[in-house]
Each structure stands twice: as C-alpha cells, then as structure tokens.
Image 1 (cartoon, rainbow, N blue to C red):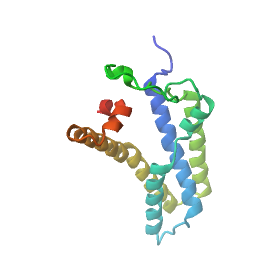
Image 2 (image 1 turned 90 degrees about the vertical axis):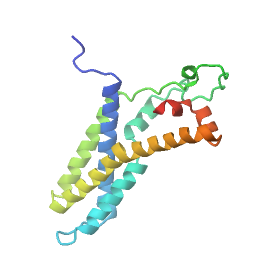
Image 3 (image 1 turned 180 degrees about the horizontal axis):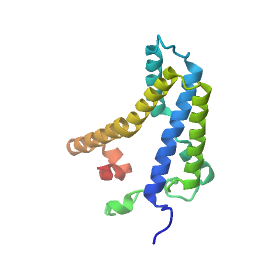
Length: 188
C-alpha cells in the first residue's frame, strides 16, 4: 500500500493552483468591498460590471502568495534557476541545455495560504451578511477569475508560443527567445 496522502508533483501542483485561485478570490473580494460602493437590489448592473472588472484585473495582476512565501522561506541561491550560467556548446543536446525545473511549493505553505483564503472569503460573506446582490458580485468575480486563469491565459500563452515557433521557421526575429529559453520549443 502507498502513503495515506500522496505528495507527488500533481498534489503539490493542485494545492498550489487551488491556493492561488482562492487567495486571488479573497483579495479581489476585499478590493471590491473597499473600492466600489455596494450595489442595491434595483441597481445591480454597475456592481456586476465592477465585479467583472476586478475579476479580470486580479486574474492578470495578483501574484500567488504561496509562491511568494515559498520563494521567501525556501530561497536557494545555489539553485540553477536563480544563477546566470554560461551558455552550453552548440552540440549539447537540448535536454542538457534546458534550465533545471524549479522546486514545488511545499504542501504546508499551500495549505496555509488556502486556509487563510477560505477564512478570508468566509469573513467577507459574514460581513456582507449574505445579501443576494453581494453573492451575485462574488459569483461574477469568481467566474471571471477562474475563466481567465484556467482557460484564457493558458490559451493565449499557447497561441503565442505557436506563433513564435511558426515565425522562427521563416525568419530570425525570435531566435534569441528560442536560444535563451529552449523550453519554448518543448512547451507544445
């Protein structure tokens, strides 16, 4: 029998993604509470538009607190991703030229950020006394945040990398990007 709680790459990645989404939702909910006036039952459209705007902006701009804490507490100056290294020779295989993969975020940090985020969203709901309009704002906010993070941003990244690879076959405009980050070639 295996361990009671698997701690592989998938679990660490899932916990990091979940803590990132919930922390972004909690921070965006408080931005919505502080920056915009509370909508009324009769006039809910500006509240929905503000929630969509805050959800879109938070998906693009808010960093992951779990990544930040992991970098803060587990900073390793000898790691290959933080050092400038001499470029390998041209005959070196692509696998040896790739930079080393960064370490996973520890489950303890992801779990801590997830717990704080859930408490924050719960306090937001308690403070707003579960009004229908505020719940609608929170739903619109969550929809835009999750759809941007899980669908739109990865799709735009893959389209950009496809464009880079297709364009590099015809011209040399993206050669430096491919040369200095060979993971671009392996991203598809």
